[in-house]
Amino acid sequence: MLVHIKRILGAQELDQLRAGMAAAEFVEGGATAGHQAKRVKQNQQIAAGSPAEQELGRIVLQALQRSPRFMASALPRKLSAPMFSRYTPGMTYGTHVDNAIRMQPRMRTDISATLFLCAPESYDGGELVIEDSYGHHSVKFAAGDLVLYPSSSLHRVQPVTRGARDAAVLWVESMVRDERERRVLLDLDNSIQRLLAANADHPEAGVLTACYHNLLRMWADT
Ligand code: NI
Image (tube, rainbow, N blue to C red; front, top):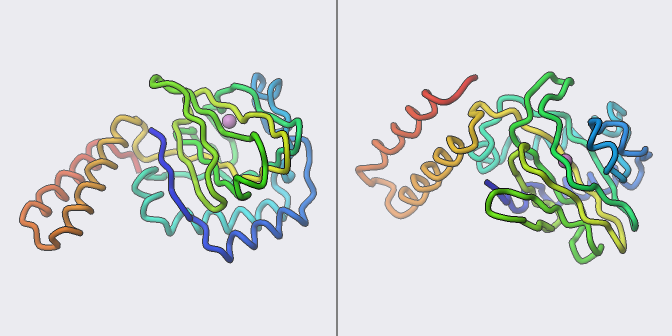
């Protein structure tokens, strides 16, 4: 399940992140990759654990946590610290799968998230390509938009050939581990929201809401 959340960042937050990235020092990205991923990762990122990374990371986490759509899609139990990457011409991240476990905090990665920070017309290449059983999905969204996809999927970042592609990436351990279950919950939640938008007093809304919470009770670990 690919979820596109538009404008998860406000204009002011986007400006703050861009200013922070313009001022930050970057290091080679391979340092934080797993054994296989390191061989195909050619990008730069703000040093892990640096004050700049922590300050910018707080802005991203605040934006995510106030987004009802993010909370409903991801049902997060733990969030990783966001990492901030940059690809300039010639840089790429070949096909890989993200590490299953991260250590700080110690967590399982169920969902991978990419937050786009540059206008898509400002660079060429740099598409995030995600493979699933339905084929390949090529993603290059507006600045301030977020994409969520299963951490179990093979994915890559196409080579950048012009400009710079800045993005924040992070991982979610979800209260609901199984992607199929998360999809049922999200479909049901979206359907209830549409029903209530059409008729705030619809008599079935209460039963459907009870079904949502009772499925969550069956499937969630807190
Ligand atoms: Ni990855």
